[in-house]
Image (cartoon, rainbow, N blue to C red):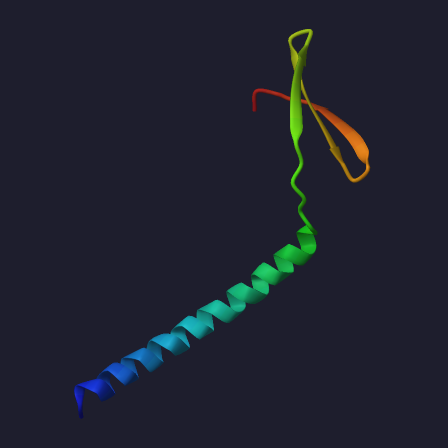
Length: 71
């Protein structure tokens, strides 16, 4: 058996292992992307009033506001 044949056999085995691991991960990633929906970049402004930090942003055609905690 020639060294090139050994390398070809090793390469084929590694490609099958990679395919066996890669395809399920690809399907899982597609399912997660469908479940989470589309992401869009948003600018957030942090405002401090009365010692309370509040985050404000505009997304989906509406303004949103949430208080921030130390967590």
